[in-house]
Image (cartoon, rainbow, N blue to C red; front, side):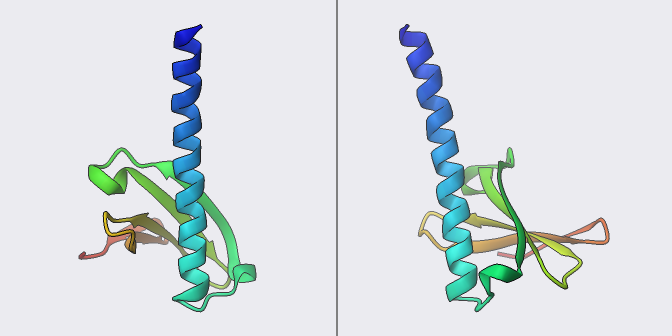
Length: 95
């Protein structure tokens, strides 16, 4: 029973962390970048298997853009654009 509770807690924590990050990225885009929420076609939180804060990321697709943007949240709670893909080519940002 304890193992089940621990596993369920781990899954709940990961789900909460991804959903929280997704909400923070959308809030950042709508307030700081002045992007309308209706212009966001899709947002998908995921585990990126990268080091540190880049382990949890959110992919964003916008209307009229042929790019997918990838954001993470640093230790100072700032939302950072890590990279974007355009026509299948990844462009990593210098942060």
